[in-house]
Length: 400
Length: 172
Image 1 (cartoon, one colour):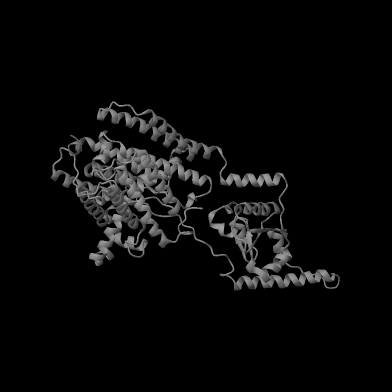
Image 2 (spheres, rainbow over the protein chains, first blue to last red):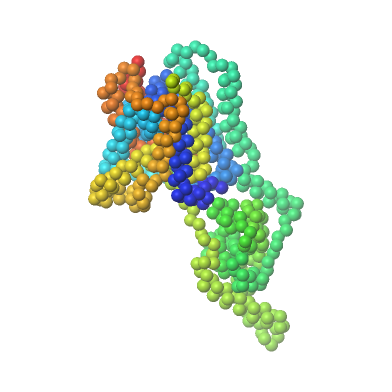
């Protein structure tokens, strides 16, 4: 599941990738003609809308791709950098940049492209940009209040409009295609072209513009990864095919004491309940978090057996089922609830030696011993017994 | 040799979209450009006037947030890649050569001053707006960021609003 940095790709390799990604970025920009200032500003005078075409096609392609990736669980949207919104500086910054665009004829990315193929005006533009950045960093104390004003966090456009993500993607795609048609007509009038678009190209463009809609329809109508997992679980339940390997409390206690290293005791209750009481060596993975990326390592391994428990049987079994569809780990369910386990081991009543059977006394002795062993084990392994908690941070970056 | 024609804009846009999507998939963030300029400015300031860099608020905050050399930065490497990629594209399309491009009626002086002032405004605005056309507008659009799309509208809106006043720089 993406993003691959820093789990699969280290931060060092990431810098090498930056070179490769930059190479592709620069190559495509130059191929599109973004190294020519006249082509760039054509957008503002209606004689050349290349910028709009490239820009919106790229934006729509990436946006639809992100929606599709997320739908099939290929990317975790919570870890993606969403440009934070500081309303005032976003608007004023944009207005200043627009002025820079029309006066200078470039934007930073395109000026680098143009300079790379020897455009002198682009080199001047880069020089000016560096001075502009320097002016900002130097006057930062004066600008800081304004720069930090209206901090609205990582808002999304569809959230602001109060519509669904899919509907927004759909609307933006439709808008882009309408803009393509409209600007083509404008360009024709401004440049006084009369030749119609060849038929083959008309059908090609029509076909290409259908593709994003088809993808968005797939996302809207077909079940995504979450739903597929849920459907499978429902199906398995309906057919009563679920076989749960259960483990009872005494056996589990024995496992914890002697083989803590080959099991993960997983508490699927809420963090509050976990805080109040949890089994020795347990980790807390609330039921609804099981499918999240940060726990992948727990469910996609075969070295340790996962043992689930909760307040009731149904929740623990549900967790076990979910885990089964997330990964391929060995999963078991504790027959007793957390509460029962607590009473059995830590709230132990000594049986009356005179009337109790030998079995009862043996059980008592075992549990008493196990309880104290588990506690001292937890104490001893405070830090190494648990799986390493991976701190998942959303990616930061962008241009700022 | 004549320069080869440019790529079909929709195809170029699609490829650029794939690059952006791949970038988001791999790194969790979009493309950028002006961030590299900032790194360069910070690095130069630290190198040339270390005392000032230690005292002035911006550099202090920057250094606190970005330990290590400011040049050891994702965007710096990316922009170096852009330089190489664009050069490579220019070579295969026969577009390499020192050229000074301007509108047909613009004087050389006007273009020189315009390029520098335009660059200055873009550089300044990109810092204020937390990203330029690549980092804020394009990447913001891909993740449907409110701020990114607002910045995009502001950039193009202001470009159109001012186009009339600078027409002599560009039009016949």
